[in-house]
Length: 221
Image (cartoon, rainbow, N blue to C red; front, side):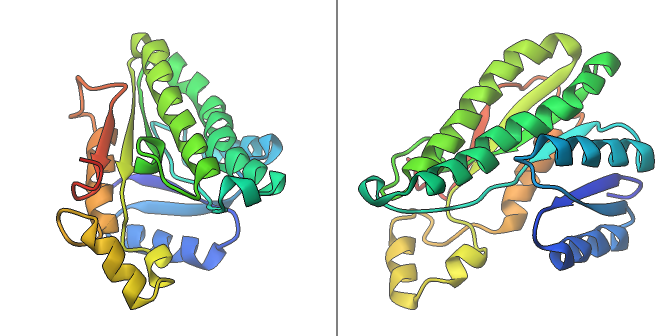
């Protein structure tokens, strides 16, 4: 982290973005927060222009924006479908397109897409989310084919259940039922997912592209 320059994107949580920036600075890096809705081309292009001016061109892109609007398909609104697809899938396209041309010119770069086992394994009540993440998985593999000639590696990390705010909203009975489905018997941590993403983003990852690395405690086995 020492010496790294990190741009933190947020849409509706400026305080959390600043907290993350403070952690990065404490670790010896430089960090700045930038507001943008990844589903909006104008906002993303403005953000990328600001990043390029303040921090320089982007060497590593981590597409991590994502939302949930869970519902059984028969009850799902068109808005719930569109919101998830626009942020999770279209947002990945918009942000990647905004930075990849400079990577191609410089003939180097790393793109890490954060997907989900929901894009690999059927999950009831998440048809929209699964479709969005499955689309990003397919995009990851297509971009790996397109961009390897430019020295750009494109990979994805697919977490299972991770100990985040999503799990905090469950009651103990729900949580215990969930944990019983995981062979390791526990949820993952954000640090465990981040370590995999960090490897995919690193120069040491010199012979891997188009891969989806699952981090789910064995849930999808």
